[in-house]
Image 1 (spheres, helix red, strand yellow):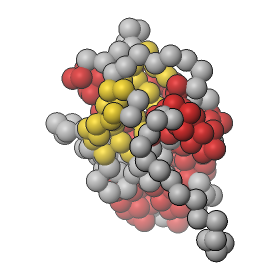
Image 2: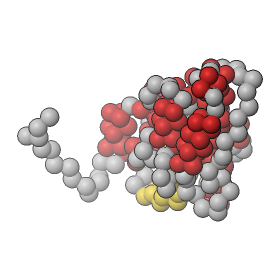
Image 3: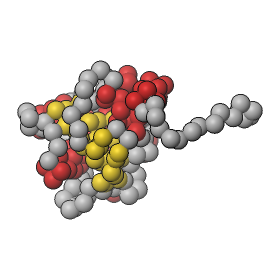
Image 4: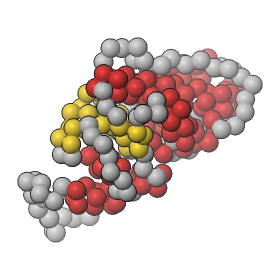
Length: 218
């Protein structure tokens, strides 16, 4: 998780404190970054993370794994159908996330449709658009709320889900101009080797000692 934050330090200086939104297959977290090595988790997922929700809803729709990129591809296409899904925990006072309700709503909607309709591209595209927008709405609103409360001037994104082009686009549109918005290049969002190497470089004096075990079986 720390590596997902620190990848943003690769090519630029970062003004701290900052709010970091980490969105990956297993994690959705809002973290107050006070300085390198000093973090406070202010919100996290209670059940399905955003990446898990993408994967599970894509499976319902018959799309390939990983679900995030597949739903994003479908969401770029046009459909005349309109579908409305919930925005889980959008208006709660905390910074936690819960996407299992969205997954369940998609499943119920899918099951109630006639087989021919739910297998149609029009339905799949419309549902993909709504799934993606529901997740984006929750992620952005919670992050903006944290920015305002903690009075930071920097927002950092990290995790594989942040490769989503629409998420990046809408963040840039909704953040005020005085907030610095940093997100790694899409290739770096999932490059674990670079992320971990950079983290080791930025924290050379860490007291944690990792002992190599060369005899582990494959």
